[in-house]
Image (cartoon, rainbow, N blue to C red; front, top):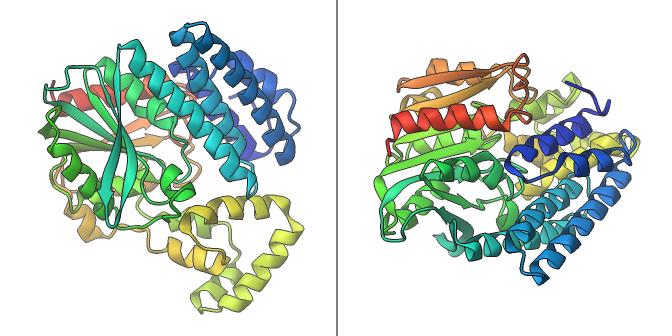
Length: 399
């Protein structure tokens, strides 16, 4: 794969952006021309240039909408949403929330215009959750009164809302699925607007979503599938260990223990402080590291935000709760598809580990570098990934 940057975060972000061109959520020329203006590792330039590209494309969208070219306007708003989301990747507070709101506004216009054109019906959801609601969307290609198989998409730890389109909805709608996506705790609107942080026990999230869906006339309660991407590859298996109304589930990739990628960034002495409960010393040493390394400061801020903590000690401690036990894996009864991309950089080996521990029907699906499909969540293989996953879902949840 061509290396645009030496910085691994920048490189992975560009691969994700280029991968979204398959579903028209980015355009290669817009991506490459923006990348050309951003030096390696320059997070300020990253935010500035992606914001500039997003604003230019959003202005083009408004012009198309004003001229009643609704399909072009919808396509441009979708791309603008992608580019605003890209800007949030490297943004500090409070710029992060401001850019996120622009990304959401562009997404909402895409939703409204897609519904107005009429090929796909889109409905906003307010899913009851504890003492509040979670925002969500239903994408439907069929009649409103026809009960259809439904794919429930769970995003990752930092996935923008546009990821629901590129990683699930666009492909599944073509095969007659109804697609539901939602902002769970720590994700998108639940994080930015409601201040609800992550939680490991995702059955308390997915079950209310399914409760809400089974009452709908356009959802067949016996044909509900669930897909989780990135950290969703932990949340969905955790949820279906307890929630048994799911007919089939996908983890892309399989994540048994979220904390391994977090703890791998720490030296032995820092892990010892963590194990010993030395919160003050741990936070003091991490404070020095953040002062000395802008990258450490940026990454920690990004990763800590959805956990709802400001202390690095609390962040690393919280991460250890995001692990599946053998009993929980054994409690999963629905068929499971687990992607296993070569060169998985965040949770290497965990897809195979999950597959080996499961007692249900399980498919471990490799994606390779030779196919251009390696790396976390197969960022450059939007077509191949969707084809393989949807073929598997078609086999296990028939139309």
